[in-house]
Image (cartoon, rainbow, N blue to C red; front, side, top):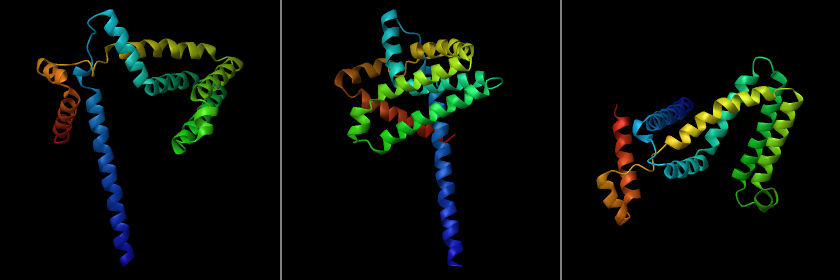
Length: 193
């Protein structure tokens, strides 16, 4: 009988972790969909600065968007190219997992540079797409994804938004703390719904 209690406690912990994950996902989606996160930049220089900052901070998500669009365009007729693309992405993910697992490794950080791995993976993917005659699908995916990415990079303005009361706090140097408190308050309000 003691085993049943342990199994029930373990399953209750699993259910609680699943609930916590669902709550955090709901909060993240609600945070992403806030209309105040997007605004037109005041001038061209602000748009360029915002685009560069967003491209740097969202580069993984932009890459995933292009990858999904390329896979979707390859699916109906170019299954061999799709399998090669997935194999190349698995190798790149394996390298990322190695870097994450061994963050102090001199071999992974200095000898095998991240930019070198990305360039090699990109070259292999482009060569295999050319060999399987799937370059039109690549151009289609880039043609659809690039405008979406650029629009998001230019109009995503979460860090740029400061209200009149917040400008005084920013001058004092407390804006980061104030933003985190306001964000936690919004999370609590979203969690109670």
